[in-house]
Image (cartoon, rainbow, N blue to C red):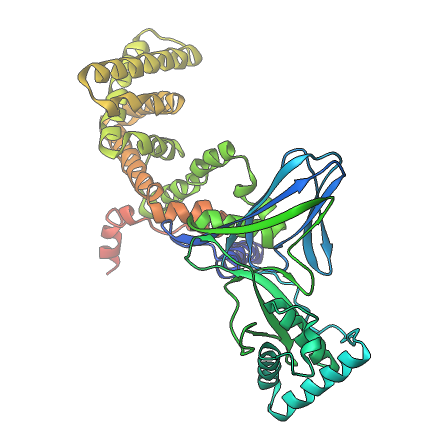
Length: 507
């Protein structure tokens, strides 16, 4: 076996398996057709009263680079212009309208999944900038920092002490002024970030919602991220203790508010989430489009739905062809034509196996009778084939009409059989019948039906169909194996009986 062939087979195998493993382990493509995935529909509703002045609404929305994978998203408004931009590494949707009037309602909807996320968390922390505090505030901040240091042993306990002291502060405490009149959870956390910056510890606030199985309205939650030397560590916003927030959808990091209104009043923002179940393939395809857009552009999922449905059938043809290669080159089954059994197997997918075998047998038998009659007329090849084709179509129509009157629904699917292939099969079978006898013709006919039946079984296997349609790159591996079989020149299994006498003589 030459090196060129081995090199080609190796390249095809490595490329096909490489893409397959990448999609399975990184993009989480399911290996079974019945796999499902849990996702959440998140809706942000923005309502405000507009006057005659131009109105602008800025809404911080989650982004695929700052949170969990977003499978799909929509911005819904009427008469508003929409732009999206990034402000301080956060994604902001900006709606604007020149002359709004009355109550206005805007929507942001996203379909989010728990899974691998591409984040914008820096490998190196940002430079710590000193907080802009007045003289009294700086003294109070340094005082609470010193007290917390005395009562802590590491960053974890230091953060917990700072959060606890700010939350329990009273009017008599010297550092109550740090809260600047605000006692919301995010106010405490923003002050903690400022105090930690005095200790040269990078920190930032994070704002998001939990993705759990509860439905309905949800409140925005706030917590801390503190740099611990190698990565960011998450801390509960109420207690200051470390806490895993990987199942939260992050809207933005840093200071700021969820929504900002210019040119209106009475701004109200409501967040609602709804857990739903998605097919694993649909979720994986959306994930692929987000995480690997180049690979998604080359996948069947990027095609229109009507075209995808066509290729769901075409991608199964190589499986049937591979079965035919094994049956002919390894087993030694003889068939009429190379691809006739595979095309018949495709028709079996609609007629089902037993009914399809009966219908194809009836058509070929009747067509063979007509072919023998036309042979007496001494017609030329092309007119004879054309006549057989016309007869085949009339026979298919007759079978459908008879089955319809008899109430046999499977007989109506006879029109799905490839009429040209049946015509050529009848022609080929008649020639074999005349040249080598009816036994050879019947054997090749039975061999064709056996190969078509096996190809149908393989092409109708749901698990195998799912693998080929979801991972078309596996066809490269199938191509490599087919090329290797193309160099096989040994005994076929059905030929062993023919050469058994030679083996006995040598013995």
